Image (cartoon, each protein chain N blue to C red):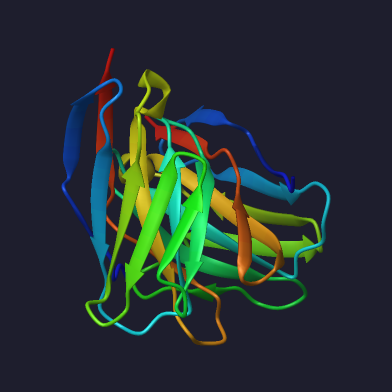
Length: 112
Length: 114
């Protein structure tokens, strides 16, 4: 079952602007991961943040995690047309089954 | 980086036929693989966990007789959609990893049942 909810569902921005999307979850987690999916394609792993971490950077990506609020955010800075995609958060629960639970996703459109 | 492949990438079949989808880990062994289904403009829903050498475990609501999973080797899991119907049309994605907490996703298989 899904435990993540993402906000907003869709986002349209101009090239060069920043894009921020949020993910909320319901139960304790081991880690939270962000993925990108281009239309009709597989998932590309972007970044993983562990439950004891608060912020992580990777290139133009910045992820924050607030375990007290059970939420995470993904910021894409200086967006490019190639960033147009759907972005999903996925949580890994602290159990032995290693199952990922995906959020509903945010569709980002970057206008040239 | 680690690569997971799926075959075929796209399949169209008639209602009532069975379709087999393969998921391979190309440069690592995986005792566990996962199968997901994704409907248009929706998120990924975990269908089942494929375990090498033992039976797959299915998520609630997923018919195990409908979606047969065989994990015959440490690099190959197959998902067979039996007696496919139009409502089974979907995007099927597998994931595998060298460790259970590190998963790489395949490129997906688009199934269209006419």
